[in-house]
Length: 444
Ligand code: HSE
Image (cartoon, rainbow, N blue to C red; front, side, top):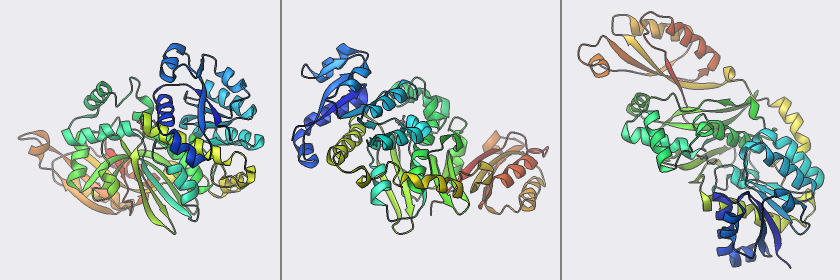
């Protein structure tokens, strides 16, 4: 059988990795796929650089539409990124009857419903293993390996940049701003790191996983997103003294009344495996009713790890593209005609309705009755305290200091109630600075 022909839109870091791995492992990939897989055409604005990557045997053009218009191309790989021209090109490729492989989490989290509907109508596949957690085959695991399960929750370290920064903050006791600069110098953070450090990238990925896990549409606009920019080194240190690590988690949790979809820094017990995922690595914990807890770990970014996921999608398409569309795994694991009902039965819940436990740090005047007033407010709000840590005033403010840090861990309560309690505590004249609140997940 003649090789399946692939057109590549954008040959940057991941595109180069895809080209190199496909060429290096060509023979084994062909044995797995049942036919060869060949990149025959590449579109990139920098034609000369692209040509130097792929050599003379591959046609390089600057116009992506020339790839889409080529009748010999069976699969288009979109590695441009973003919601702009990438969306137009993906929809045009689908309209032209091409299968699409994309690593574009932003595009799918925001426009996935439209893109998957267009693909289904045209009978083509849109595959996106590389969009979540890079080289970790988490989409395959959720869509296929765990298909017997009622998935209860997913919690993932799904942004390597922020995990690198948090690891460095903990290891070296440094503040966020200092570590960010170092991460940029080392190439772990981009010149504009906003999407990573503000949690947006992780929220794109959590949104995609929530759809596959619970059979709801992608609803990025409903995700709660909080990044790591306000984290202080002292909170990482106090958390450690209490037996916890702080990680940026993407969480999707099924409840009887809806779905929690949120990204924020979280304390997690230091003894959990996922708490020990350091540096730029990614990990995802999935809890299913039949399988129990499963953990997936690996590189969430990088040239060849991401290429590994892109090529897995190419192989899937090479095997399945002649199959009846109804026999293929649905894009989001559930049959598309079941999504509307699931959306009304399982709405994404507002953050005020989320139930979790909390770490609170209060800078307080070190005088009689302060602790009693604070705990009294929590008791009135029916918020149960799990642990309290109070530092010596000298240790916090230097010798002779008359203020100190009071750290409180709570049991689970609904976020709205915690918001009201924090407002009441903040109003106490003996609470001297804005209260720090970090959510806590036991992941048990
Ligand atoms: N910027 C992402 C990260 C990789 O830091 O994990 C691509 O999603």
